[in-house]
Image (cartoon, rainbow, N blue to C red; front, side, top):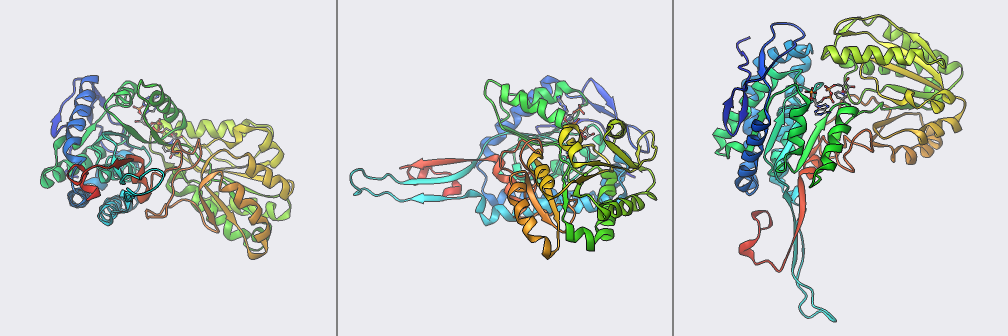
Length: 504
Ligand code: NAP
């Protein structure tokens, strides 16, 4: 590996060394030292972002598209080094990081194409009706405008696609909003090399340097200072329910509250309908097991719970799923803390008297092995803790007494990123009763598939009712994600010379 992190922040186009330091904790390889941004450094980055907004917020879409495409090119140039440091820091396999890099650059280029098409502007025009009675109508034009500097928190589980140049950053830059990133302390070197790529692209595209700043740190104070900074106008976040909720509350409690677009926890329930369970039992069980262990289960779309009607088919499903999970050995997790939280969660689950352990194994340090549990529908309904996310390769099979109890479980679910139906044609009447319930619970409804693997495209919704997200109708993946960082402005009788370039 040729890239050696220097541990500095990128603020307003300059690499800045901090006094306070923290050491990285890589899965393998040597640790490196990184700065912890002070309140003064947070302030400098936010002020630079505000200053940059006065030019970047008014750039033509062609210039912003060029920036996004150049960032993607600069990431490609550093591809091997990104994979090397990313693998060391996160323990994720090389192939996964290469794939995630392709997704990240593809996402940047997708946003470039999207803004060139112009649909994000959502332009509307009600022409003046001076002769209308009893009152004339003025000329009214509407366009979506960028909101201002955006803070982005990198996610531990997607060091590329949801971090420094991930979907939040790409969609904010596409909208015309400068970005201040708090890199995730689990992969600070990966964040740094991506920040270098963005820095190089900004210089090539002649964009104001304050358009992108990158701050490191492993303290709560730093993240809190960032979301409370008066010049920050919105926050993009992917992470835990506890951390996300704390930051959401801080955003709401500011003298000027701002939107907090948090993507938090989800158990992504799958409903296995009777005919599908009878005819495709083994296939669904092995597919579910594969989805559960993918990336050591560290996906927000991990399908942690399946619901079916109890009986011999449910017994066979449990046996087949346990058989698929049994040979899976320990997988490296992203951080020691995430591995410890996984073990604690599985121990809490096993301690419930109404929960039966179908398959368990021991793991230690930074590793995880799969665990499989089962409980009755009545137990699940009586014990809300069984609906909480355990981040890692764990599955819970819920055996409902009958179809009516399955529906009751669907009604009782908290907000989810995804809900899945496994069904045959003969299950359609039951599915027709479930879909209206599930579409109120989740951002994405799937049939006969597994939710891990989120397509980045125009129709994707990666969000959902709380606690899946705090997005209130938005998505953090796909081109619709840009809407989070735009605000509609109406121009009434405003002369052409005063209109923003987006309206011309
Ligand atoms: P996290 O603890 O929520 O941290 C995410 C980011 O937010 C970090 O930069 C963290 O900074 C910051 N942060 C958290 N709480 C904060 C607070 N109260 N004030 C200020 N900043 C705060 O998430 P994580 O480190 O990625 O993983 C921990 C757990 O999150 C996992 O075990 C898993 O349960 C969950 N998780 C869920 C998803 C998902 O997609 N649903 C994804 C990743 C993780 P510091 O690290 O410096 O505190």
